[in-house]
Length: 334
Image (cartoon, rainbow, N blue to C red; front, side):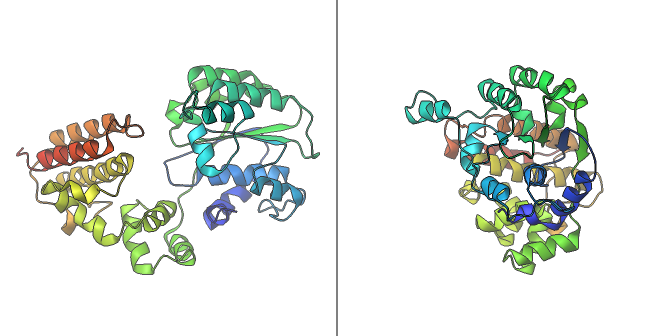
């Protein structure tokens, strides 16, 4: 079972939501707060044979079936790329199409998968604990897919419950949002984040430094630590961009590089406004006279680049272009 699933801030929210009634939840908030883990914790508790106030027992046959991704009463809807990454099985037809190279795994939640989930919700449950449908990230539903869910979400057949999790709730159809009980994800407390990271083997000094770079999101710290991004690397990023050193980004994916540059841009805007930086130490920021207008334009370009970050034509060239744009922005006067 995921260590994040048992993180204290996830357990606390699981207890809070299980004490409330509702057939459809929408878990919303910024990335890195554990929307998927909380959604899975809720679905596991709903289907558990011996649930507690804190959630699923983790030991019964139902919990084991979820752990090995074979529970007959749980439908998981994700982009195929994400399902493969997290170990959830695709439908036989989808897997066959991908294996036969008829198409690539989808980065959206396909309407065919949603229609299968709607049909699943109408069947009798197999274990006598009802059924659950988990959708993540919900913003990856296109309009057709979302509309296929609407009727069932409004009038669910039998004992079926839905949990939708999103990192961009503004992208969801208003009709989807209105049919769910909304829960805004809670931020972990600083002390519990440090304690949890220490339990995962992250040294205190590394955790303290990377918590700042991750904006207080401990799951992002864990991913950074596992990928080898050290506090020294993060501290050196602003200077490397000022010097146009694209090698500093060589170990990052374009999406990771854009995220890091957005944080740098964010802190530079804060400094221009006379506020303290959030992601970097003030001493780490480069001397730059770029105006707020120039920095805002840079941020807009980064957002535009993010749209193609998952499938760049050439990742290396994209990193070089991002570095060149960063250098030019940082050296702009006024």
